[in-house]
Length: 480
Image (cartoon, rainbow, N blue to C red; front, side, top):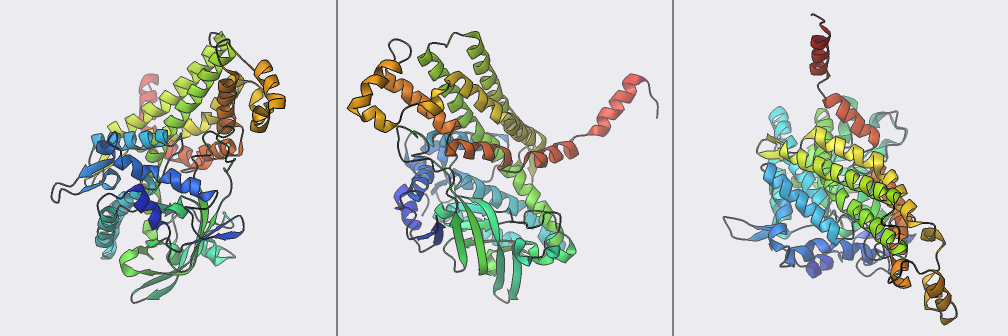
Protein backbone atom coordinates (compact mmCIF):
# COMPACT_ATOMS: atom_id res chain seq x y z
CA UNK A 1 0.00 0.00 0.00
CA UNK A 2 2.90 2.40 0.67
CA UNK A 3 1.49 5.73 1.82
CA UNK A 4 -2.23 6.06 2.56
CA UNK A 5 -4.30 9.14 1.86
CA UNK A 6 -6.03 10.96 4.71
CA UNK A 7 -9.37 9.66 3.45
CA UNK A 8 -8.10 6.07 3.46
CA UNK A 9 -6.81 6.55 6.99
CA UNK A 10 -10.14 7.94 8.24
CA UNK A 11 -12.05 5.18 6.49
CA UNK A 12 -9.92 2.62 8.32
CA UNK A 13 -11.16 3.95 11.66
CA UNK A 14 -14.71 2.86 10.81
CA UNK A 15 -14.05 -0.73 11.86
CA UNK A 16 -16.52 -1.42 14.67
CA UNK A 17 -14.10 -0.52 17.48
CA UNK A 18 -15.58 -0.21 20.97
CA UNK A 19 -15.31 3.43 22.09
CA UNK A 20 -17.27 5.14 24.86
CA UNK A 21 -17.43 8.92 25.30
CA UNK A 22 -19.40 10.85 27.91
CA UNK A 23 -21.28 7.69 28.88
CA UNK A 24 -22.38 6.64 25.38
CA UNK A 25 -21.10 4.16 22.83
CA UNK A 26 -19.62 5.91 19.77
CA UNK A 27 -20.54 4.33 16.45
CA UNK A 28 -18.07 6.28 14.31
CA UNK A 29 -15.24 8.41 15.72
CA UNK A 30 -14.85 10.21 12.38
CA UNK A 31 -18.37 11.65 12.44
CA UNK A 32 -18.95 12.10 16.19
CA UNK A 33 -19.57 15.81 17.02
CA UNK A 34 -16.54 16.05 19.32
CA UNK A 35 -14.29 13.09 18.57
CA UNK A 36 -14.23 13.83 14.84
CA UNK A 37 -12.09 16.89 15.63
CA UNK A 38 -9.44 14.57 17.04
CA UNK A 39 -9.73 12.29 14.02
CA UNK A 40 -9.32 15.19 11.60
CA UNK A 41 -6.39 16.45 13.63
CA UNK A 42 -4.51 13.15 13.47
CA UNK A 43 -5.29 12.88 9.74
CA UNK A 44 -2.88 15.79 9.26
CA UNK A 45 -0.07 13.23 9.34
CA UNK A 46 -1.41 11.67 6.16
CA UNK A 47 -2.21 15.02 4.54
CA UNK A 48 1.39 16.15 5.06
CA UNK A 49 2.65 13.03 3.29
CA UNK A 50 0.46 13.98 0.29
CA UNK A 51 1.32 17.69 0.31
CA UNK A 52 4.03 18.58 -2.27
CA UNK A 53 5.50 21.09 0.22
CA UNK A 54 6.18 18.37 2.80
CA UNK A 55 6.28 15.10 0.88
CA UNK A 56 10.08 14.83 0.80
CA UNK A 57 10.29 15.36 4.55
CA UNK A 58 7.54 12.96 5.57
CA UNK A 59 8.06 10.13 3.09
CA UNK A 60 10.99 8.11 1.78
CA UNK A 61 11.54 5.76 -1.16
CA UNK A 62 12.72 2.23 -0.44
CA UNK A 63 15.81 1.49 -2.54
CA UNK A 64 14.89 -2.12 -3.32
CA UNK A 65 11.21 -1.74 -4.26
CA UNK A 66 11.09 2.03 -5.02
CA UNK A 67 7.94 2.09 -2.92
CA UNK A 68 7.18 5.33 -1.08
CA UNK A 69 6.61 4.91 2.66
CA UNK A 70 6.13 7.09 5.71
CA UNK A 71 9.58 8.16 6.89
CA UNK A 72 8.49 7.58 10.48
CA UNK A 73 8.92 3.84 9.97
CA UNK A 74 12.61 4.15 9.08
CA UNK A 75 14.80 3.45 12.13
CA UNK A 76 17.22 6.32 12.76
CA UNK A 77 20.71 5.15 11.80
CA UNK A 78 22.60 8.20 12.99
CA UNK A 79 22.60 11.83 14.04
CA UNK A 80 21.15 13.10 10.76
CA UNK A 81 18.19 10.74 10.89
CA UNK A 82 17.36 11.90 14.42
CA UNK A 83 17.55 15.53 13.32
CA UNK A 84 15.19 14.79 10.41
CA UNK A 85 12.83 13.01 12.79
CA UNK A 86 12.90 16.07 15.06
CA UNK A 87 12.09 18.29 12.09
CA UNK A 88 9.17 16.04 11.11
CA UNK A 89 7.69 16.15 14.59
CA UNK A 90 8.17 19.90 14.96
CA UNK A 91 6.72 20.59 11.51
CA UNK A 92 3.65 18.38 11.99
CA UNK A 93 3.00 19.88 15.44
CA UNK A 94 3.22 23.38 13.97
CA UNK A 95 0.75 22.40 11.25
CA UNK A 96 -1.49 21.01 14.00
CA UNK A 97 -1.81 24.35 15.79
CA UNK A 98 0.89 23.49 18.33
CA UNK A 99 -0.77 20.13 19.14
CA UNK A 100 1.26 17.00 18.41
CA UNK A 101 -0.35 14.35 16.16
CA UNK A 102 1.13 11.25 17.83
CA UNK A 103 -0.27 8.52 15.57
CA UNK A 104 3.08 7.59 13.99
CA UNK A 105 5.69 9.11 16.33
CA UNK A 106 4.94 7.16 19.49
CA UNK A 107 4.25 3.85 17.74
CA UNK A 108 7.54 3.89 15.87
CA UNK A 109 9.32 4.82 19.11
CA UNK A 110 7.97 1.52 20.41
CA UNK A 111 9.01 -0.40 17.29
CA UNK A 112 12.61 0.82 17.57
CA UNK A 113 12.61 -0.06 21.28
CA UNK A 114 11.25 -3.55 20.68
CA UNK A 115 13.85 -4.16 17.99
CA UNK A 116 16.69 -3.34 20.39
CA UNK A 117 15.37 -5.07 23.49
CA UNK A 118 13.97 -8.28 21.96
CA UNK A 119 17.39 -8.98 20.47
CA UNK A 120 18.72 -9.18 24.03
CA UNK A 121 15.73 -11.21 25.23
CA UNK A 122 16.26 -13.72 22.43
CA UNK A 123 19.94 -14.05 23.30
CA UNK A 124 19.11 -14.67 26.95
CA UNK A 125 16.05 -16.90 26.60
CA UNK A 126 16.31 -18.44 23.12
CA UNK A 127 13.00 -16.86 22.06
CA UNK A 128 12.10 -15.57 18.60
CA UNK A 129 10.66 -12.20 19.57
CA UNK A 130 12.94 -10.16 17.32
CA UNK A 131 11.70 -12.00 14.24
CA UNK A 132 8.11 -11.28 15.30
CA UNK A 133 8.89 -7.59 15.84
CA UNK A 134 10.66 -7.36 12.47
CA UNK A 135 7.70 -8.87 10.66
CA UNK A 136 5.23 -6.68 12.55
CA UNK A 137 7.29 -3.57 11.76
CA UNK A 138 7.29 -4.49 8.06
CA UNK A 139 3.52 -5.03 8.18
CA UNK A 140 2.89 -1.62 9.76
CA UNK A 141 5.19 0.06 7.28
CA UNK A 142 3.68 -1.65 4.24
CA UNK A 143 0.13 -0.75 5.28
CA UNK A 144 1.04 2.74 6.59
CA UNK A 145 -0.70 2.04 9.88
CA UNK A 146 -1.32 4.48 12.69
CA UNK A 147 -0.15 3.27 16.10
CA UNK A 148 -0.89 4.05 19.75
CA UNK A 149 1.19 2.87 22.69
CA UNK A 150 -0.37 1.74 25.96
CA UNK A 151 2.28 1.68 28.66
CA UNK A 152 1.04 3.26 31.90
CA UNK A 153 -0.86 0.75 34.03
CA UNK A 154 -3.58 1.95 36.40
CA UNK A 155 -1.29 0.68 39.23
CA UNK A 156 -3.69 0.54 42.21
CA UNK A 157 -1.60 0.87 45.37
CA UNK A 158 1.62 2.34 44.00
CA UNK A 159 3.64 1.15 46.98
CA UNK A 160 3.08 -2.47 45.93
CA UNK A 161 4.40 -4.55 43.06
CA UNK A 162 1.82 -5.92 40.59
CA UNK A 163 1.70 -9.40 42.16
CA UNK A 164 0.99 -7.90 45.60
CA UNK A 165 -2.01 -5.79 44.56
CA UNK A 166 -5.45 -6.45 46.08
CA UNK A 167 -6.79 -6.17 42.54
CA UNK A 168 -4.57 -8.46 40.43
CA UNK A 169 -5.67 -6.62 37.29
CA UNK A 170 -4.17 -3.30 38.43
CA UNK A 171 -1.46 -4.06 35.87
CA UNK A 172 -2.08 -5.73 32.52
CA UNK A 173 -1.24 -9.43 32.85
CA UNK A 174 -1.37 -12.77 31.11
CA UNK A 175 -4.31 -14.79 32.43
CA UNK A 176 -4.09 -17.72 30.02
CA UNK A 177 -1.39 -19.24 27.82
CA UNK A 178 -2.49 -21.17 24.74
CA UNK A 179 -0.51 -22.97 22.03
CA UNK A 180 -1.47 -20.23 19.55
CA UNK A 181 -1.17 -17.19 21.83
CA UNK A 182 -2.00 -15.56 25.16
CA UNK A 183 -5.04 -14.01 26.83
CA UNK A 184 -4.50 -10.70 28.67
CA UNK A 185 -6.54 -8.74 31.16
CA UNK A 186 -6.19 -5.32 32.79
CA UNK A 187 -6.20 -1.67 31.81
CA UNK A 188 -3.78 1.04 30.72
CA UNK A 189 -4.35 4.74 31.45
CA UNK A 190 -3.44 7.91 29.52
CA UNK A 191 -3.26 6.12 26.16
CA UNK A 192 -3.01 8.92 23.63
CA UNK A 193 -4.83 8.73 20.31
CA UNK A 194 -6.05 5.15 20.68
CA UNK A 195 -9.49 6.05 19.33
CA UNK A 196 -7.81 7.22 16.11
CA UNK A 197 -5.24 4.50 15.45
CA UNK A 198 -5.31 1.19 13.65
CA UNK A 199 -3.24 -0.69 16.22
CA UNK A 200 -2.16 -0.39 19.85
CA UNK A 201 1.22 -1.59 21.11
CA UNK A 202 1.35 -2.58 24.78
CA UNK A 203 4.55 -2.30 26.81
CA UNK A 204 5.44 -2.87 30.49
CA UNK A 205 5.46 0.22 32.67
CA UNK A 206 8.16 -0.72 35.18
CA UNK A 207 10.80 -3.16 36.38
CA UNK A 208 9.32 -6.35 37.83
CA UNK A 209 10.21 -9.17 40.19
CA UNK A 210 10.08 -12.89 39.43
CA UNK A 211 6.73 -13.07 41.22
CA UNK A 212 5.40 -10.60 38.62
CA UNK A 213 6.20 -12.87 35.69
CA UNK A 214 2.67 -12.74 34.24
CA UNK A 215 2.85 -8.93 34.13
CA UNK A 216 5.97 -8.97 31.94
CA UNK A 217 4.06 -8.74 28.68
CA UNK A 218 4.38 -6.79 25.45
CA UNK A 219 2.19 -7.21 22.39
CA UNK A 220 0.24 -5.47 19.63
CA UNK A 221 -3.39 -5.85 18.55
CA UNK A 222 -5.79 -4.04 16.20
CA UNK A 223 -7.90 -1.50 18.07
CA UNK A 224 -11.10 -3.27 17.03
CA UNK A 225 -10.00 -6.55 18.68
CA UNK A 226 -12.73 -8.32 20.65
CA UNK A 227 -12.52 -7.50 24.35
CA UNK A 228 -10.66 -4.21 23.83
CA UNK A 229 -12.69 -1.23 25.10
CA UNK A 230 -11.69 2.43 24.97
CA UNK A 231 -13.19 4.91 27.43
CA UNK A 232 -12.28 8.30 25.97
CA UNK A 233 -11.52 11.26 28.22
CA UNK A 234 -13.69 14.36 27.62
CA UNK A 235 -11.13 16.82 28.99
CA UNK A 236 -9.49 19.40 26.75
CA UNK A 237 -12.68 19.84 24.70
CA UNK A 238 -13.23 23.56 25.17
CA UNK A 239 -15.81 24.35 22.51
CA UNK A 240 -16.64 24.41 18.82
CA UNK A 241 -16.52 28.18 18.24
CA UNK A 242 -13.52 29.15 16.11
CA UNK A 243 -13.89 32.72 17.44
CA UNK A 244 -13.54 31.72 21.11
CA UNK A 245 -11.41 28.62 20.60
CA UNK A 246 -9.26 29.16 17.50
CA UNK A 247 -6.95 26.20 18.24
CA UNK A 248 -8.94 23.70 20.29
CA UNK A 249 -11.99 23.84 18.01
CA UNK A 250 -9.79 22.35 15.25
CA UNK A 251 -6.97 20.53 17.03
CA UNK A 252 -6.88 18.35 20.11
CA UNK A 253 -5.75 14.97 21.38
CA UNK A 254 -7.91 12.33 23.04
CA UNK A 255 -6.66 9.96 25.74
CA UNK A 256 -8.37 6.73 26.71
CA UNK A 257 -8.61 4.30 29.54
CA UNK A 258 -7.71 1.23 27.48
CA UNK A 259 -9.36 -1.90 28.86
CA UNK A 260 -8.27 -5.43 27.96
CA UNK A 261 -11.10 -7.73 28.98
CA UNK A 262 -9.66 -11.19 28.28
CA UNK A 263 -8.18 -10.16 24.93
CA UNK A 264 -6.61 -12.92 22.85
CA UNK A 265 -3.23 -12.09 21.30
CA UNK A 266 -1.84 -14.50 18.66
CA UNK A 267 1.77 -15.59 19.07
CA UNK A 268 3.08 -13.52 16.16
CA UNK A 269 1.88 -10.38 17.97
CA UNK A 270 3.46 -11.32 21.34
CA UNK A 271 6.85 -9.65 22.00
CA UNK A 272 7.39 -10.47 25.69
CA UNK A 273 5.57 -13.09 27.73
CA UNK A 274 7.00 -13.77 31.17
CA UNK A 275 10.64 -12.69 30.84
CA UNK A 276 10.28 -10.58 33.97
CA UNK A 277 13.88 -9.39 34.22
CA UNK A 278 13.60 -7.70 30.80
CA UNK A 279 10.46 -5.66 31.56
CA UNK A 280 12.31 -2.75 33.15
CA UNK A 281 14.78 -2.52 30.28
CA UNK A 282 11.93 -2.48 27.77
CA UNK A 283 10.04 0.20 29.70
CA UNK A 284 13.08 2.46 30.15
CA UNK A 285 14.36 2.12 26.60
CA UNK A 286 10.99 3.15 25.22
CA UNK A 287 10.88 6.16 27.50
CA UNK A 288 14.19 7.46 26.15
CA UNK A 289 13.00 7.26 22.53
CA UNK A 290 9.65 8.76 23.43
CA UNK A 291 11.07 11.63 25.50
CA UNK A 292 13.04 12.64 22.42
CA UNK A 293 9.74 12.74 20.56
CA UNK A 294 8.32 14.79 23.44
CA UNK A 295 11.00 17.46 23.41
CA UNK A 296 10.69 17.63 19.61
CA UNK A 297 7.02 18.60 19.76
CA UNK A 298 7.26 21.11 22.63
CA UNK A 299 8.88 24.08 20.78
CA UNK A 300 6.00 24.72 18.31
CA UNK A 301 3.60 25.27 21.22
CA UNK A 302 6.14 27.57 22.85
CA UNK A 303 6.55 29.47 19.57
CA UNK A 304 2.78 29.93 19.48
CA UNK A 305 2.84 31.35 23.02
CA UNK A 306 5.62 33.77 22.02
CA UNK A 307 3.71 34.84 18.92
CA UNK A 308 0.46 35.34 20.81
CA UNK A 309 2.20 37.40 23.50
CA UNK A 310 4.04 39.56 20.95
CA UNK A 311 0.83 40.08 18.96
CA UNK A 312 -1.30 41.18 21.88
CA UNK A 313 1.50 43.44 23.13
CA UNK A 314 1.47 45.16 19.74
CA UNK A 315 -2.33 45.41 19.68
CA UNK A 316 -2.36 46.80 23.23
CA UNK A 317 0.28 49.38 22.32
CA UNK A 318 2.84 48.11 24.84
CA UNK A 319 5.29 46.27 22.58
CA UNK A 320 8.02 48.76 23.49
CA UNK A 321 7.56 48.52 27.25
CA UNK A 322 10.67 47.22 29.01
CA UNK A 323 8.80 44.66 31.09
CA UNK A 324 7.14 43.27 27.95
CA UNK A 325 10.51 42.95 26.21
CA UNK A 326 11.85 41.22 29.31
CA UNK A 327 9.02 38.68 29.34
CA UNK A 328 9.30 38.01 25.60
CA UNK A 329 13.04 37.52 25.98
CA UNK A 330 12.42 35.03 28.77
CA UNK A 331 9.91 33.15 26.60
CA UNK A 332 12.36 33.06 23.70
CA UNK A 333 15.23 31.81 25.88
CA UNK A 334 12.97 29.12 27.36
CA UNK A 335 11.88 27.89 23.95
CA UNK A 336 15.31 27.92 22.38
CA UNK A 337 16.85 26.12 25.36
CA UNK A 338 14.46 23.20 24.81
CA UNK A 339 15.01 23.29 21.04
CA UNK A 340 18.81 23.39 21.42
CA UNK A 341 18.85 20.52 23.91
CA UNK A 342 16.74 18.50 21.48
CA UNK A 343 19.34 19.03 18.76
CA UNK A 344 22.09 18.20 21.24
CA UNK A 345 20.39 14.90 22.08
CA UNK A 346 20.58 13.99 18.39
CA UNK A 347 24.13 15.24 17.86
CA UNK A 348 25.41 13.23 20.83
CA UNK A 349 23.44 10.06 20.09
CA UNK A 350 24.68 6.51 20.63
CA UNK A 351 24.47 3.82 17.95
CA UNK A 352 23.16 0.52 19.35
CA UNK A 353 22.78 -2.40 16.95
CA UNK A 354 22.51 0.02 14.04
CA UNK A 355 19.84 2.24 15.66
CA UNK A 356 20.61 5.77 16.84
CA UNK A 357 19.48 6.31 20.44
CA UNK A 358 19.18 10.00 21.48
CA UNK A 359 21.47 11.12 24.29
CA UNK A 360 19.67 10.24 27.50
CA UNK A 361 21.07 13.08 29.61
CA UNK A 362 20.27 15.85 27.12
CA UNK A 363 16.81 14.38 26.45
CA UNK A 364 15.85 14.25 30.12
CA UNK A 365 17.26 17.69 30.93
CA UNK A 366 15.25 19.13 28.03
CA UNK A 367 12.06 17.41 29.19
CA UNK A 368 12.58 18.47 32.80
CA UNK A 369 13.42 22.05 31.82
CA UNK A 370 10.28 22.32 29.69
CA UNK A 371 8.08 20.94 32.46
CA UNK A 372 9.66 23.02 35.24
CA UNK A 373 9.16 26.31 33.40
CA UNK A 374 5.96 25.84 31.38
CA UNK A 375 3.70 27.40 34.01
CA UNK A 376 6.07 30.38 34.22
CA UNK A 377 5.77 30.81 30.45
CA UNK A 378 1.97 30.76 30.72
CA UNK A 379 2.18 33.36 33.51
CA UNK A 380 4.24 35.71 31.34
CA UNK A 381 1.84 35.41 28.39
CA UNK A 382 -1.17 36.06 30.62
CA UNK A 383 0.57 39.00 32.27
CA UNK A 384 1.24 40.64 28.90
CA UNK A 385 -2.30 39.95 27.68
CA UNK A 386 -4.29 41.44 30.57
CA UNK A 387 -7.58 40.61 32.28
CA UNK A 388 -9.76 40.57 29.14
CA UNK A 389 -8.47 37.02 28.63
CA UNK A 390 -11.13 35.94 31.14
CA UNK A 391 -13.52 38.93 31.28
CA UNK A 392 -14.11 39.67 27.59
CA UNK A 393 -17.50 39.53 25.84
CA UNK A 394 -18.91 36.48 24.12
CA UNK A 395 -19.15 35.79 20.43
CA UNK A 396 -22.91 36.26 20.73
CA UNK A 397 -22.40 39.77 22.08
CA UNK A 398 -20.02 40.56 19.23
CA UNK A 399 -22.62 39.56 16.65
CA UNK A 400 -25.58 41.21 18.42
CA UNK A 401 -26.29 44.71 16.92
CA UNK A 402 -27.45 45.90 20.34
CA UNK A 403 -24.00 45.34 21.88
CA UNK A 404 -21.58 45.28 18.92
CA UNK A 405 -21.21 49.06 18.89
CA UNK A 406 -20.24 49.21 22.56
CA UNK A 407 -17.64 46.49 22.09
CA UNK A 408 -16.25 48.19 18.99
CA UNK A 409 -15.97 51.52 20.80
CA UNK A 410 -14.68 50.44 24.20
CA UNK A 411 -12.55 47.36 23.56
CA UNK A 412 -10.39 48.71 20.79
CA UNK A 413 -6.64 48.88 21.31
CA UNK A 414 -3.83 50.55 19.41
CA UNK A 415 -4.93 52.89 16.63
CA UNK A 416 -5.09 51.08 13.31
CA UNK A 417 -5.85 47.68 14.89
CA UNK A 418 -9.43 46.48 14.54
CA UNK A 419 -11.33 45.56 17.69
CA UNK A 420 -12.13 42.19 16.17
CA UNK A 421 -8.46 41.39 15.60
CA UNK A 422 -7.65 42.38 19.18
CA UNK A 423 -10.43 40.16 20.52
CA UNK A 424 -9.25 37.26 18.36
CA UNK A 425 -5.72 37.62 19.74
CA UNK A 426 -7.09 37.68 23.28
CA UNK A 427 -9.23 34.62 22.55
CA UNK A 428 -6.18 32.76 21.24
CA UNK A 429 -4.41 33.37 24.54
CA UNK A 430 -7.50 32.28 26.48
CA UNK A 431 -7.69 29.09 24.43
CA UNK A 432 -4.02 28.31 25.01
CA UNK A 433 -3.74 29.27 28.67
CA UNK A 434 -7.07 29.86 30.43
CA UNK A 435 -9.48 27.23 29.12
CA UNK A 436 -10.11 23.53 29.58
CA UNK A 437 -7.68 23.06 26.70
CA UNK A 438 -5.10 25.30 28.37
CA UNK A 439 -5.38 23.42 31.66
CA UNK A 440 -4.98 20.17 29.75
CA UNK A 441 -1.66 21.44 28.36
CA UNK A 442 -0.47 22.47 31.81
CA UNK A 443 -1.04 18.97 33.20
CA UNK A 444 0.59 17.41 30.13
CA UNK A 445 3.64 19.61 30.67
CA UNK A 446 4.15 17.96 34.06
CA UNK A 447 3.09 14.37 33.49
CA UNK A 448 3.29 13.47 29.79
CA UNK A 449 6.22 11.18 28.93
CA UNK A 450 6.98 10.73 32.62
CA UNK A 451 6.77 12.93 35.69
CA UNK A 452 9.34 15.45 36.86
CA UNK A 453 10.60 12.94 39.42
CA UNK A 454 11.19 10.36 36.69
CA UNK A 455 13.43 12.79 34.80
CA UNK A 456 15.28 13.80 37.98
CA UNK A 457 16.05 10.16 38.77
CA UNK A 458 17.35 9.53 35.26
CA UNK A 459 19.50 12.67 35.29
CA UNK A 460 20.97 11.92 38.73
CA UNK A 461 21.69 8.25 38.02
CA UNK A 462 23.12 8.95 34.60
CA UNK A 463 25.63 11.61 35.56
CA UNK A 464 29.24 10.68 36.37
CA UNK A 465 29.53 12.09 39.88
CA UNK A 466 32.74 10.10 40.52
CA UNK A 467 34.46 12.10 37.78
CA UNK A 468 33.39 15.34 39.44
CA UNK A 469 34.46 14.14 42.90
CA UNK A 470 37.86 13.24 41.52
CA UNK A 471 38.13 16.69 39.95
CA UNK A 472 37.21 18.33 43.28
CA UNK A 473 39.82 16.24 45.14
CA UNK A 474 42.45 17.22 42.62
CA UNK A 475 41.57 20.92 42.95
CA UNK A 476 41.57 20.70 46.75
CA UNK A 477 44.85 18.80 46.92
CA UNK A 478 43.21 15.74 48.47
CA UNK A 479 45.08 12.53 47.80
CA UNK A 480 43.78 8.97 47.49
